[in-house]
Image (cartoon, rainbow, N blue to C red; front, side):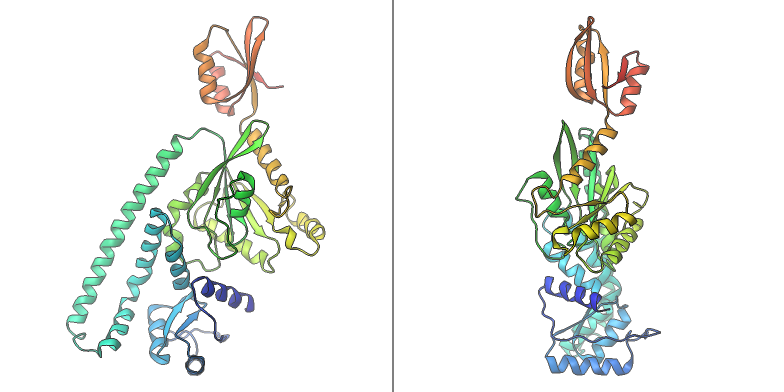
Length: 401
């Protein structure tokens, strides 16, 4: 419970607010009118008055009726966890795509809550003119929001098609996506592997909203296309997940998901479960997943943790971005994956067959070539299906040495 409240506090801090008091209640059955019990509502009203609070934030998502009920009782603006997250995303969206996604999520959240928004307005104007024209305006607003939602969805579909066009023109190489709970260190890993120090890293929730993709040199003439994605969080608003599907398509197209876990966080197991649930919601549960325990430098006994975690996750990788060699195990694992997806083969060609040699340079990664017994022998990294296609065309393709 306390860990959940601490996380909510970090969300409020990220949104620019300051915590002046907390209140908890364990309830067997939620009140349809106010979520919490009548006595607790009175206690909340007193706490808000005593602390001069201008905003009350619930960790649970409130229905439109519950939000309105609590506001009318305590006379203070009320937001829930989902609304705070949407507000953070709105302030941190930088790209055109992210702004479209956040606006769509906000409108979908707002639509069923318009009546509550008009309640705020009626207090401001004293209720004058809202019983008749107000209802008409409310319906007008609903129509306008529904129309805007349709427009935004169309624009995001265009973004998705544009991404597909870009992907279709990429060279074939291993694709991996960094996924994980917010603030697990995904951006730091991308910066460490790529060597690009201009990649934004911040010790705050949701530092990254837009998918960032970089080609990373793994050595031995191997590269990986690595994508950083928006962090997940407990009770991530479903509207937001739906809106960010276009951004998360990079994860859907990846050959491998790198599930980055903050090993220093006391609730890392719950955070892993949250990430799994979001991946299921996105239809990515069948993707190959590599667990990466990060931030080992923050542990008092990193070796003991690694030994214990290895028993539960035998294939897990342990990393830290605070040491120069802290990402070598991850780099080695990615190199092994890259070799598996594009093994080296030896292709035998007629030395005069320049057309076929040019084809190999286009579809593969030529490592070296030379003459042997009157034949041009080309060592090249190729996907297995391409090698098989060449064999069907009568080309001699042997396993690489």
